[in-house]
Length: 312
Image (tube, rainbow, N blue to C red; front, side, top):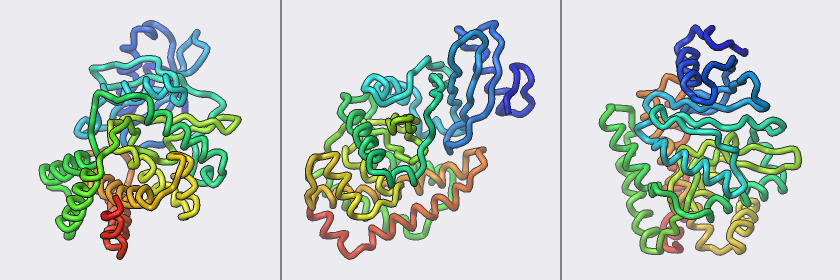
């Protein structure tokens, strides 16, 4: 529901009004805004500014997200994604508030998991990810191991809930880290958040990537591992996607992706426990985290786990 500037009543509405009133290009202009659904880290808004040909998308950081999102790095990644041809045009960045402003892309829609059953769409998505991964290093390097360590420390600090077998899972993480580092990490820009909702599809099945606030230099294969975990692809499709991305499929690449998928689930499960303690968003972070922990266990307990580590 659209609101005119000055008519906001809720805390979120008053916050977005304060933010958009401060953007210099919009000073003194009539504005209206409405919420955009989706996302479990921030509040998102569509803003109409009188006299401008396009609407704008404004992303406002959620409470507590400064603990694991570096907004300057996120903005750098957004600019890089657009420059490589697979990101939304960036209008501006309010550094002090950590707020990014983008063009609102009409005629495109947010993807769903079902969209990636379409071979053309998923191949276009692989192309978008590969282009971003190959776009040159970011200033921020944060591997999946760094992310897990960060969230484990935050869980301890906040006295957040944690599973009884977390110590055991972290021991498996340490084994995976030793194997991956021994094989050599391929650090490239990764968006690190390949939910279906973070891709947009154009009228000709084109793809752009969104929500790069978690982006950092990370192990290249993590991008596919997290994406596969979110998409629930069959093994044959995963093999197809590995071939499309790398130009080949090997047992070592397959093992790398499988190991990193478990680490991705461990990372996001622990992140969810932090969010449960901090976030004001209407989302069941405990349920989400329990699901992610269970998915990590399925891989960590798999009889082939030791073999995958050896193949790395």
